[in-house]
Amino acid sequence: MTVFYHPDLEANTVVLSVEESRHCIKAMRKRAGDTVHLTDGKGMLAEAEIVSADLTGCVVSIIWREEIPARRLRLHLAVAPTKNADRMEWLTEKAVEIGIEKISFIICEHSERPKIDMERLRRIAIAALKQSQTCHLPEMETLLFTDFIEREKGNDTLRYIAWCDENNHSQLVHETLSQGEVLLLIGPEGDFSDPEIEMCRKMNFKEIKLGERRLRTETAALYGCFAIAAKQPMDAMCSPTMGE
Amino acid sequence: MTVFYHPDLEANTVVLSVEESRHCIKAMRKRAGDTVHLTDGKGMLAEAEIVSADLTGCVVSIIWREEIPARRLRLHLAVAPTKNADRMEWLTEKAVEIGIEKISFIICEHSERPKIDMERLRRIAIAALKQSQTCHLPEMETLLFTDFIEREKGNDTLRYIAWCDENNHSQLVHETLSQGEVLLLIGPEGDFSDPEIEMCRKMNFKEIKLGERRLRTETAALYGCFAIAAKQPMDAMCSPTMGE
Image 1 (tube, rainbow over the protein chains, first blue to last red):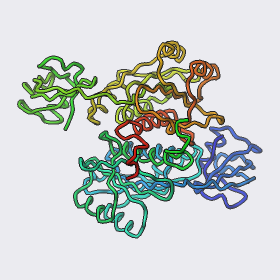
Image 2: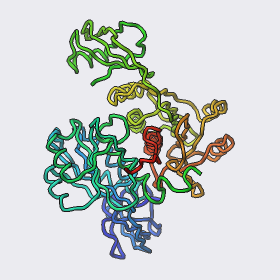
Image 3: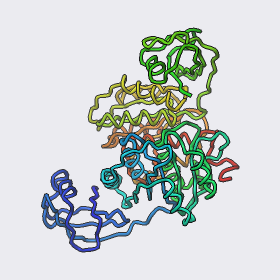
Image 4: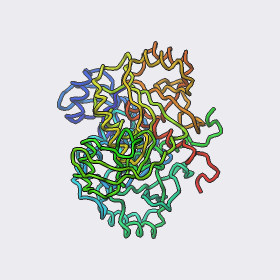
């Protein structure tokens, strides 16, 4: 099954973008009368019939729609972008595959101001969404650490910050989490600055470790995605049937 | 701390390779008299003093050695290489960062015969070893699925195969594992062939899932690395202090 993307599936007739039309008609060789699956990236899955197999604007007619429920345990990843753009693109693709609800690229004091091409990252996220056949595209944004913290003051999310401190022994994989939203902060290569750590402490961020290794920024971020994916109720860690 | 690599740390005086010498003297600006750390990738960590800061063959004199114990729970990953070499290089880097003891690239029936540059993968593994400051370089090999299975018949490792079957509901993250070696088989994009699945069943491979998503080969492989890393005794999943 290939899932195609269209941001709005409310209408009964939908015209796919040039990119999606090419993928559908040219790459997947779909013809008028064929049925395809669509998602709006907001949880909607639909089946549709191709009315006109137009390479520049494939017209489809929706047969049925289904709302795919969001994950019980949701992850908002706030990560300092790496200097190397590839690593952020890779992280975006993998995070969408594993599962993620929101990615905030936060420019920290020790960030070597990277150029972030949000349009490109968004295209990568959509490709990963289609490839992994999921229906929830993460929200993505870029902002300054200070602005991010200022905004988060309003939220009562469960907050974690992963940073390199010998006195910090709590492991994210040891946390008992089963639902709600988790905010996980991952710092830049040079780690967070002392004032940044202080701001987080004032906001009751829990300081945690991601295993025992020294991980690159994007690897640490993905570790967080895997940890949260593994803690979803459907495959909750300590279920009675564990290991049976 | 930067760790440099030299395959043999038995002698008291060691000459670094051109690549390591350049990294040490040119990139890290080390001088004669400076102390550096070295690993042989077989568990040995050493501190050494630079005797001659030669760009083409930096000579160091070992001060002390320490045997870093191997992980209690070891992972042997057998993965069908992807057509795209980048994805295997990325997997190698990340697997070494997270932790892995052996990677076998197995050419399956549905593998689109990829070119695997083992020398390049080895260099990537060494760079990741240094970056993540670990002392265990994974064994790496390429072989045919059938030869791999033939050889494994002799071993009594705990064996898992991850493949896409609706009737398969066991999750790797639910397995109770704390020590010994685990063999995890990850198939190609086109999945394993029926005869390959049959061979594995005959050898009592346990069929498991890696979460609920459709993952790319390299993402599934990394999921396995994360799952095993999270199950190491030092941060065992269901420890009494869990969530405290």
